[in-house]
Length: 439
Ligand SMILES: NC(=O)C1=CN([C@@H]2O[C@H](COP(=O)(O)OP(=O)(O)OC[C@H]3O[C@@H](n4cnc5c(N)ncnc54)[C@H](O)[C@@H]3O)[C@@H](O)[C@H]2O)C=CC1
Ligand SMILES: O=C(O)CCC(=O)C(=O)O
Image 1: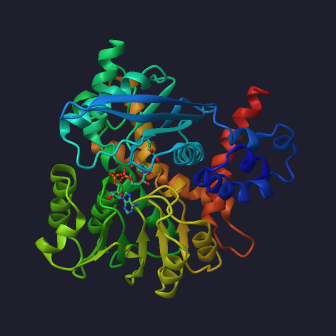
Image 2: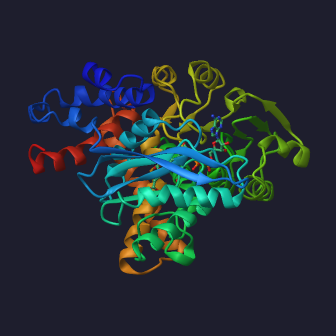
């Protein structure tokens, strides 16, 4: 860790992500000298390369705007770099390095041949017109296209990048290279997308919760659930929970959260999706339409619940939130967002063995897994049915759950899902790196 801290000054999110993994991997490799001799973990913390570039575009008033673009190509030991693109004003190198590092372990857990990467820009889509977003995406892809390809690096969506942005970026890539190829995932069905990809991260997170509860003889039905966020992951997580008979009582955005004691319904959720994806409004508007309460500037973790699904952003569960969830007897957390809990919150939760906690690497791997299936379908020039893709997704998440149990079960029977996911994700990448020799 001292080396990682020295080499990565001013990158708190990246150091946090590495520390969380190192805490599990260092004891695991202590009796396996080959990993230490070949410096496998140290090599995994250093990205293969980071590309940064200028993105220049014109706004609707004709003014020139300048943003910074990034692609972190972290590790391609087991497949082409794979991971989303984030457009948000908080994007910087530390955030993207943490996301790319996590992605390597997550992608390994899926069992598919996918390396890890992540990219994005400090561009803020909020308040921008559709044409401005299009011009930005085209300018971003003009540079990014030099560094990606269907067998090199295959980006997808993340915060601020959904179907609309993927469409604009894919169109620009196709125009630049004059080839129709599976260089992005999360594409619309009409031009090579996979069924269930939009739903996959949220659904997968619920399947992980289902697997965790089933392993302990419990189920989701009738449980009260907190969901944070109101974007892609949150909305499909809520949809699947409602379908399985749970009661979802919260959603949030960066402005605050809504609490609907009656529970969300499919109709209310459809209204939220229209609000977020078409009108691009704020979640607070929900209470004017459906009642309930809006808590400005707050997060939902104080509402009593059985199950919690952080699906907004990193470090959204802090130590005091964890204490509240524990005090309210929350039974389980499945992380839809990447690294949503701070180290202090994780420690507090892990000290209490009654709260099951699935880390993002495992719980949100459904998104990238179906992206991997989208790549397979593109190579085959085929599109599978909803049922086929959903079956694969179920199987992949259940295998991830089993790997967490295999590598995370302690002598007293307690399952540390963080340790299980870290060790299982590490093993496959490490074996490939050993096979390649020193490079
Ligand atoms: N889209 C995907 O397939 C995957 C996404 N993720 C992760 O899931 C999380 C959510 O991503 P998406 O739903 O795709 O993005 P999105 O852009 O569709 O939605 C993001 C949501 O988070 C909220 N949010 C953003 N910053 C916030 C803040 N500071 N405080 C409270 N709320 C905030 C936004 O208001 C929005 O509701 C991120 O951590 C992302 O990395 C993880 C795996 C795959
Ligand atoms: O589908 C993908 O390639 C990326 C998904 C992603 O960004 C993530 O898992 O955090």
